[in-house]
Image 1 (cartoon, rainbow, N blue to C red):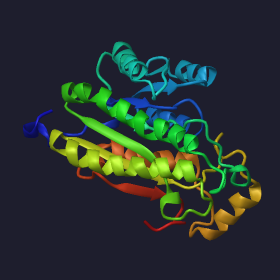
Image 2: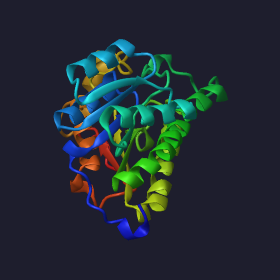
Image 3: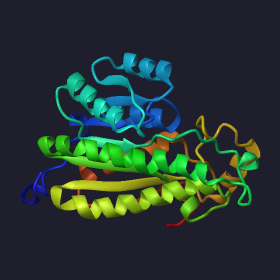
Image 4: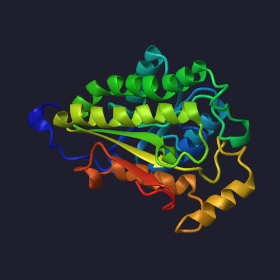
Length: 263
C-alpha cells in the first residue's frame, strides 16, 4: 500500500486471514474462535500448546491451521507468515499480538519491588515488544499485497489502575501501548491501523487460574456491570478493531473490563 491507497476499504471479517499469536489457549483461543465464528481464516500460533492448537485447527479444517512459532524469533515469525499464505492462498491481513511469555497472575506470588530483577523485565519485553515488532515487520509486505492491514495488540488496564503491581508485565505492556501509537502514526499513510485492547483480570484463563475466587468476586463488585469480563467478551472488542466498522480508528487503547477503569 502507498499513500494513494491508504483509504482502501477494510476487508470484511469473513475475507480476512488472521494470525493470532498464542492463539491456542486462554484468551488467545477465545480470539481465534471469535474470528473463526465470523468466517475468517485463522493461523493459530503456539509455542508449547501443540495439542490445543491442533485440536482447534482440526475443528475447522478448511479455515484454521496450527503452526508453532516463537514470536521472539524473527525467523520463526517469518515462517509463520509463509505457512499462513501456503495454507490459505493469500497473505495474512490481520495480526493479533496476544502471546504472553511465561507469566501467571498470582498477586501473592509476584516479585516485589525490592526483589525483582531486570531479567524479569527483559523476558516480558521480549515477548510483548520484540514479539510485536517481529510480527508487524513480517506482515507489511503481505498487507501491501492484500490492500488491507489490521494490527491489534493486547494490553492491560493495569496502566491506569495498578491494583496489583506486576512490575515486569505492566512495564512491557506499557511499552507495547507506546509502540501501538507510534506505529499507528507511521503506518497510517499506508492504510494500516494499529490499536490496542486492554483488559483486566479475565474469568478465567490459564494465566488467571492462580487468582483466588475472592479476588474475582471483589473485582466483580467494583464494576458497574457487577461481573468479571470473560475471554469471549474481550474477543468481541478485538473483532471490532479488525472489522470495517473501525476503519477510521487507529492508535487507540480500548479498555474492556466491565467499566472498572475509565481510560
